[in-house]
Length: 107
Image 1 (spheres, helix red, strand yellow):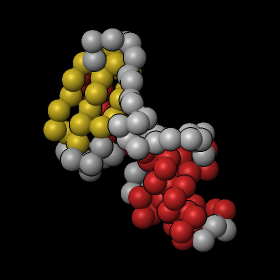
Image 2 (spheres, rainbow, N blue to C red):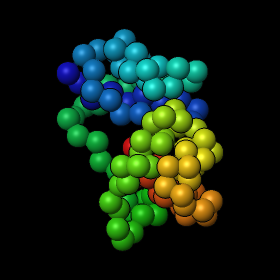
Image 3 (cartoon, one colour):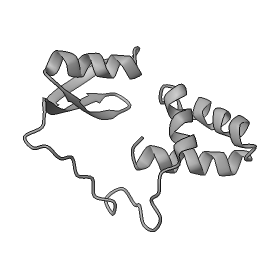
């Protein structure tokens, strides 16, 4: 398997796949309505993201609940925030912070 970078207008998805066709299928499993701009086979087995380039500092522990809400919402931030509020009882401000921070650190 190879590591592929799949870019759409809204996302860059990193996925393991046997070939480019299966990498495209992986994207469509999660984002069936998104149009692929680019698919690139990565030259190495690792993907590195600089936290400082993303403006992340301090605690970066992902939230499983937020990630589950993002998955159920197919990456739709507003829908994920609503799901998180419904699931946890959090207010809008807290839910927005949790969902957005999990989007930044990758879900």
